[in-house]
Amino acid sequence: MAADLTYIGAVVLHAIHSGQRYGFQIMAAIELPSGTVYPALRRLEKGGLIRSHWEKATVARAEQRPIRKYYEVTAGGQSALIEAGKRFRFPEIEAVPKATAQ
Amino acid sequence: MRFVQIPVESRLLLWAASILVPSASRTEWRREWDGEIWWWIASQPEAARSVRERIALAVHCAGASADGLCLWMGDEERIARLRKVLRGPRACLGAGVCLLLLIGVLSGGFENTRRSLQATFFAPNPELAILSQTGPFMGQRSGVPPLKVAYWDRHSTSLQGASVYVIQADHRAAQVGVQFFKLLGTKPQIGRFFRSDDLPNSRSPAVISYEFWKRRLGADPGIIGRTITVDGQQLRVIGVLRRDFWFLGTHPGVWTLLGESSLPVGVTGAICRLRPGIAPIVAEQELRKLARQVLPRQSGTGVTISLLDAIVSSPIISLGPLWIAFAALAFALGALVTRAAVVAGAFLAGKTVFLLSVLFLGALEFGGVVSMTSIGGTTAAAGMAFFWLAIAGALCVRWAWNDQRKRCRKCLVRLTLPVRIGEGSRMILEPAGTETACPRGHGVLLTMEKNSVAPKDRWFPLDATWGELFAPVAKTTL
Image (cartoon, rainbow over all chains, first blue to last red; front, side, top):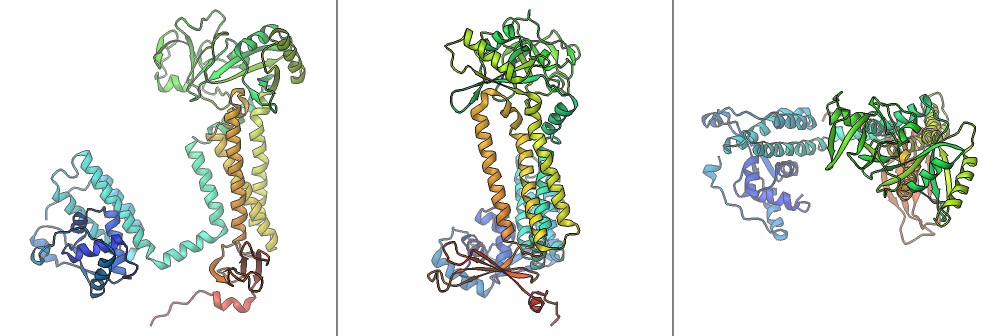
């Protein structure tokens, strides 16, 4: 999968690694449309480079918003990102501190 | 949780995209997208309120279809099922029928074809003809100058009358001679047609089409005698054409009078009505003689008279046998024929004829084939139209043949599982090519490289012992 990683896939992976954790946040960070970001997320997840999980409903309820699906980079994704970094130049994305990413 | 109102177009787009998502993951997919849209609206105060923001949100939701498609493509079973359907011969004919329906919808129910049929079979005009001038180069046809038409109209003994017409390139307006509508034998819906005392320049008299009257003037019954402005020109309406008026597939909204000495701008032609019992060839000889006597210096004294019924009916009549042939071949395909070669032949012929018929119908509806063949002045345009039609027809035939080559000789399903064999550098001892197999296990096709010495296509039927290899794999639970 790492060798097949496209530029878009690599940028999305880079954004997740930088702390952008749900679809809308990733989209806003890398300024790509939903029709590009979500298919890339599906391909990365299918390739095992990222994994997803739903946040706890109590957290969402406390913040009065719908629950989010969070994405995170797997170990395979980390190494793929390092490999991709040798081939591509990523846009600058402001890293999100872990505490606020939740 | 703060409640947000999702605009109806965005909801519709999401719903349409959700159809693509496999049912097992649809609920979760929808939950994620609903959350995303909530964030989109909640984070932008103007979202879903102004038109611009609604469009931006709709574009965002349109991205859901790409996401849904991605998930749908990931569903291997569904793709396999779709591929199976698409490989079958029914999909080929189904696509043709869909194309036919599309043409029907876009052309308002085959309007040109229907009107041509109506004009040909329900209101025949055996004496009405198109006049065109024959040029010196390979009988090339062109329009006839208005002066010459007026001269023939006055002096010919074989014609009841002749009238010139000029149709604008965009088909929105036309200019005609005084006798034009009288020669066509049509009657006005309201008002009258042109008279010899109508002058083309002072408050130009105009006859308008039924559609123009209905759509632009609200079917006003008191329109006769009023002045309307079209493209900056003031026109006095003297009559409205009938709803069923049809002239060579053209639909000008406004018909004005053309003076004998006017310089025509547009597609020029002329119509004439022969006297009863006069053959077109006799009239042609007389018109040539008149033209040589009076206008000896003008080039193009050759004249051709083509009967309107023959012009209009020729595409329709030629289409009829094609349809009958297709129906017969389709019947042969689907009916009691069991011999593979006959079925394959019927399928190929049916497919080719059907494609050509659809192409022709499309040209008849959108390409103005009828008007192009008959209006003298558009020889160059007609030539180009027929050139492209011929190219498209040749491509259809080629596609049909290539498609047939790639199908199973027994069940007509598209062959699959391509395997490269041989080596490109050894053309004689080990010819290179591609081997494809029928997914039902009926046989294998070996397609050799173009520069190979071996025959291009070789079909190897497989017997029942190969069946196990092509049988669907049973689902097992581990």
